[in-house]
Image (cartoon, rainbow, N blue to C red; front, side, top):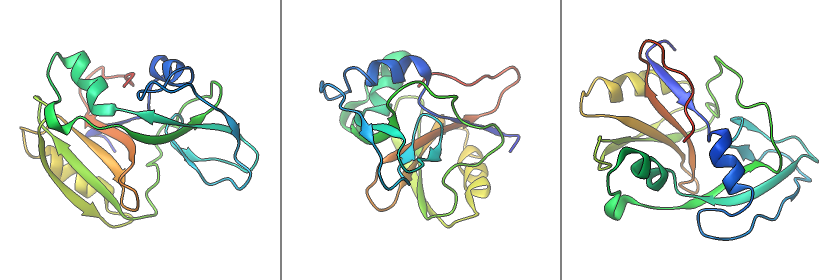
Length: 166
């Protein structure tokens, strides 16, 4: 994966979400007795007994605020699982949650949705390449098919690019 970068929810945003989420609710952490929750802080599934929190997150709204644009009717918030406390973040070089069908949703620089694609397990790199072949695509969101929840953001790789707080 050399042409794009995968972004988890960044540490500064996680700190906010662990206090008050994007719906204005206080966070209520607890143990994940069964494990398997898709954690958006480190882009892996939780282990049984890990302390997690289910929070409301508005990824496009946060991106739009930083980009100085209005997300308009595409603004949405939804539930995401995060560790209840700080974690080490995602492992590098790992394509997260790639063993299930996902939707890759493409966005323009003004926050408009440019389209989406249902992606089969193992076909994500090709889907990202197709998305970024369109110069109008600024970034993509990968979402769960079952519930439509945000999983992570993908951006083009540029020289000197580092992981960003989303």
